[in-house]
Structures are given as C-alpha cells and as structure tokens.
Image (cartoon, rainbow, N blue to C red):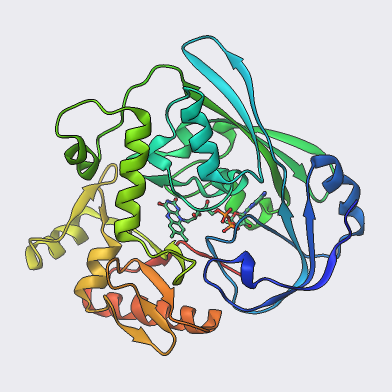
Length: 333
Ligand SMILES: Cc1cc2nc3c(=O)[nH]c(=O)nc-3n(C[C@H](O)[C@H](O)[C@H](O)COP(=O)(O)OP(=O)(O)OC[C@H]3O[C@@H](n4cnc5c(N)ncnc54)[C@H](O)[C@@H]3O)c2cc1C
C-alpha cells in the first residue's frame, strides 16, 4: 500500500495553478486501500478530485486525499435504460465518452466538464440544459469518522442548482468512492439550449455530434486551464425576489432574467459583472476573463488571496451598482 507523501506541492492538483503545499498527500486506488489508511492519516482531511473547482488560499495543514479509484461497470440493462457504476477517480469526460461509445445516453450535454466522477456527485455539475443529479441513482461513500460504508440514494443527496448535502461542512466526512448512474438506451437529444438547437438547424443529431458541438461551444467561450489558470464559473447566478428583479428590469430593460420558482427570479451573474464594467479587467495578477466575465483567471503566479481579493471587490461593486449580492461557486480552502 502507498504511504502518504509529506510536504506535497498542490500546484498540479488545482486548475487555478495556485502554488501551495499540503502537509500530507495520500492517493488511493481502491476503497479497501482508503479504509486501511484512514486511521493513521493526519487530520483534518480534504478530499480533492482534479482540483477544477478549488481555490487554495494557503497551504493545507492536514492530509489531502485523492481518489484514483477507476472503473466503469454496467450493473443492469433492460434495453430501455441501464445502470452504470463508475469509480470516483474516473475522469468525468472519459465517463461521458464511454457512455456514448456503449450506446448509453443522457450525459452528452455534460461533455467537456473538467474533473472526476466523485466530485460530479458532490457539485451537481450542470451545463447546456442538463444536470448530473437527473442521472444519479446512488452515491457510495466511506464515512471518514466511523470507517463505515454509507450509500446515499439520489433522493437523500439534497440536489439543487450546483448543490448537494456533500457540500455541507458536517458532511465533509463522506468520501465518495463510486457513483451509480441510470442512463437511457433510447437516444433523444436534449437541444433545449438555444446555441445547441441552432447548431443542428432542425435535424436530429447523433449523441456523438451533440458531444462534439458541446465541446466546440465550451472551447469557444472558456479558457483552457493549462494555458490560463481558472476554475470555470467563479460565481453562481443570484436568485432574487420578483419585486427586486422588476425594479432592475425598469432600469435595465435588456437585463436577462429567468423564473426560479414562486416569486423568485434568477439573474445572470455574467451580465451583472459585465455591466459593472469588469469584463477583461484585472487587479495585479488576478483577472476577469475577457470572453466570459463569470470566469476569474490567474494571469500568472497569482496567490489564492489575490484571486479572492478580486472576487470580493467585484461582489462589493456589483452590490453598489445593482443591490444584488453575488456568491461564489468555487470551494475556498
Ligand atoms: C474550464 C472549466 C469549466 C468548467 N465548467 C463547468 C460547467 O460547465 N459546469 C459545472 O457544473 N462545473 C464546471 N466547472 C467546475 C468543475 O469542473 C466541477 O465543479 C467539477 O465537478 C469539479 O471536479 P473536480 O474533480 O475537479 O473536483 P474538485 O475541484 O477537486 O473538488 C470539488 C469539490 O468536491 C469535493 N470532492 C472531490 N472529490 C471528492 C470525493 N471523492 N469525495 C468527497 N468529496 C469530494 C471537494 O472537497 C470539493 O468540495 C468548470 C471548471 C473549469 C476549470
């Protein structure tokens, strides 16, 4: 069994490319290996996947745990739908690619999202009119405090927009080791998102074509973390009471707004940041991406504190201008 590594650099374990260290780093390839190691790991513990939604603001004093649990196994298949168990360490986009190659549908709109299968169930990843919680049947975890296995049915995971119970501080004890997904055997494209519908102009594309179109759209809008450090959308879209949105709509008739349930309206964080004048701006080595103002970027050698300072300055400025409070999607460590 591998031993924890002391004083490990996390530079290649976070897509923001923040240069910090963990006192200890432990990577495990199976649930058994994790269970055997748990009693001797220095606390606190921090689970990471590919680090594509993390912002390290300092060195981590404890043990950073990374799952390298592989696996893609079809558990059941009745010709209409099939259940697949995927290991937490499997790259998310490889999972989507394998689903399509096996004639299993439902994940193609989520193509190209960075990260691993374990975190997909924590984050409830979503894009282009799809959300992973609609595909999840169950999430298998190890309880780091008791050393016991606990399986959560999807209904127990508290899924909401980019949210789950696994994000609550009291549930950080649950280490995701595998996820069971239910996928369809019947191909029905989800072209509800306008840019996707336009890409196919009324014809029915194959799942592989939808995947390609999604990846092309993403590449045209989002910076490649290998070139410009980032963690995707830094902020979530704010949800405000209807009357607040109505007041803003009077002042800014072009402002996008979407219904978010009874009496509530979802606003576009990108629009608010752009219209506060932040697109393409920077403070020191931290910047706002010029093509997508939701994305904060590391212009080279930035610290987590510098990125956080830019984020807080934007939040204060957007609040001054629109009286809307933005909140951060990125997990700050
Ligand atoms: C360029 C870019 C584009 C992006 N586009 C999107 C997008 O379109 N939609 C979207 O939803 N997200 C997007 N993201 C964000 C990111 O891809 C997702 O949040 C992803 O799920 C993070 O996966 P990860 O493996 O990197 O997890 P990490 O960032 O390492 O961790 C994320 C969270 O999950 C927890 N975690 C990780 N693994 C485990 C585990 N095994 N057990 C328990 N907890 C765990 C961590 O503690 C942390 O709280 C984007 C990011 C980038 C850089």
